[in-house]
Image 1: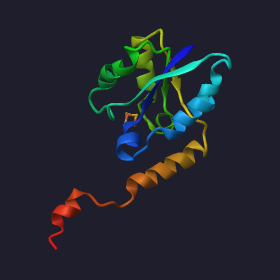
Image 2 (image 1 turned 120 degrees about the vertical axis):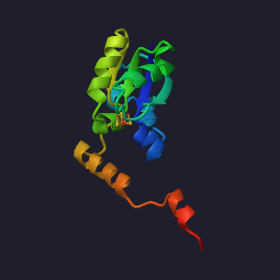
Image 3 (image 1 turned 90 degrees about the horizontal axis):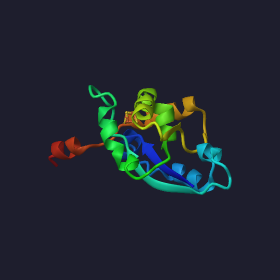
Image 4 (image 1 turned 180 degrees about the horizontal axis):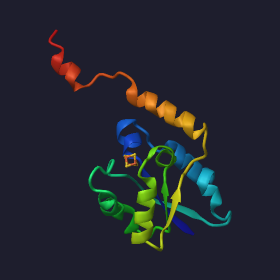
Length: 144
Ligand code: SF4
């Protein structure tokens, strides 16, 4: 049996509203990177946690604290989500830091299958970030 944890990108979950539905669907169907486990090996999803946000000055320190939400519960592998794989400029640094800190845990970059090319995916996500949207500022300024 393999006990799996998933690390998601907080830009995708907190800002863009992803519920990790595609990652979880392919976990259940054993597609994408979950197809790499032997067919007869049972997979257990131990937990999902989003990264603590882009690291600015802290490097991987904040992530090493946050990942305890998975590492304290006997995970064999931690998968970085597809959005981390396609979007996160820090993924290699994070992978190295986690491998060094938790040598018994396998770090896998990716979850669900690719539905579009990474370039197309990045372009679509960029459009989402850049779309005009109302905020509390508009409520505050709306005096009518
Ligand atoms: S550090 Fe990477 S995974 Fe975390 S919010 Fe930033 S881009 Fe997403």
